[in-house]
Image (tube, rainbow, N blue to C red; front, side, top):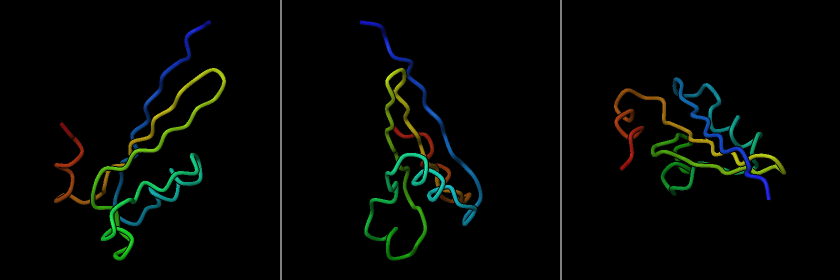
Length: 76
């Protein structure tokens, strides 16, 4: 059994520039999981979306794009 390549892609940018929509279209996963994010139409917390192919495993990290929320980019 051969090992699959693991790749993590971070998406960061300004508010309303389409980061969440990009990740949704690439992976099929909505990274806005909080009720408040859905109500406001704005990402508040980090979002993660997995994607796998035969040869690789991808992880997409969506980072909220405001200066105030940028402290959440370094979880843990």
